[in-house]
Picture 1 (spheres, one colour):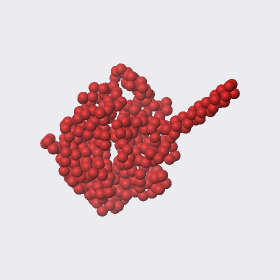
Picture 2: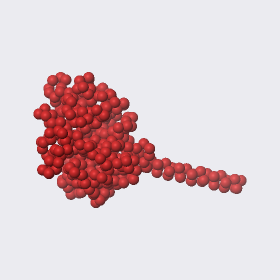
Picture 3: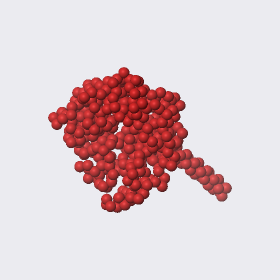
Picture 4: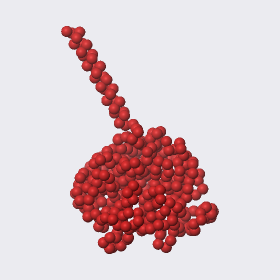
Length: 396
């Protein structure tokens, strides 16, 4: 009987050991990359600003194509905050003029999308836009009326929603409804950063990430997608990028700045603006994640120094294939003919688009640039798009 008992115990211990190994394997698998894309839920990356590099054009790209956006008295672009690219068109949201410009693939102006004004079918202030390229629809959030207008690419208004149940700064429409960055806006007593509304904007379905009223917010868009149907969310009071999966917001990528990571847990417990300021003051914390793009193998984002008041900005690329990160601080690319600004406007698996501002050119570079184009480019012309094509190796 004792022998049988010992054998049973050995067998049980063996199964327990195998079970523990299986659990270890599963935990490891959850923190690694996979065929789903850049990073599975909860992957943590380390960002070290002590290893800042120059962004060398030839590290990533083999060719660049320049597209000057047509300039006329009625088409003057101030600040591009969103850009969408299709096979036939370029859609540009200019936050400075609160306008939506549609250009063809060569940069020739086609039309405005919607009309700016105070009429019932016009918009006064645009918070955010989203292009559904498959359906040829443009969604526009009008801030003061708190409605979403739906246009086609011919510029026709197809639908105007009812006033939304909560106010919000930016949005992203999915099959489950409309995700909005609402923060401490009206009709949001819990001060939730992320809210999932029904498609008609009338019903609150889920809410995530409450925060104190005095904590940092942004008027920039805080949603992005990978062009394959996956949507992502990030916000200033967190160092996490979340994937919007169905009705859930799942941790996707955690950005670790080491000892310079903002103590977000303490900030969430802060009881006053004075306590919040004290937590950030006299520290060299890094954070304020913004301008995020996700592709198959990379995540791009910007961040800044928060506690010093200097506001120094950085750009970071995370590569899932190598598992490494690269940090850049210089405002322009190196090893390229023209001053291409490192403000990414669009990213896909095979090309990235950056802006060129003619007003920043030297006289010599400007004359060289003018000879490159048939278009009449002046110092005060609209921006030029630098369409940079990735090397085959960089696409993997």
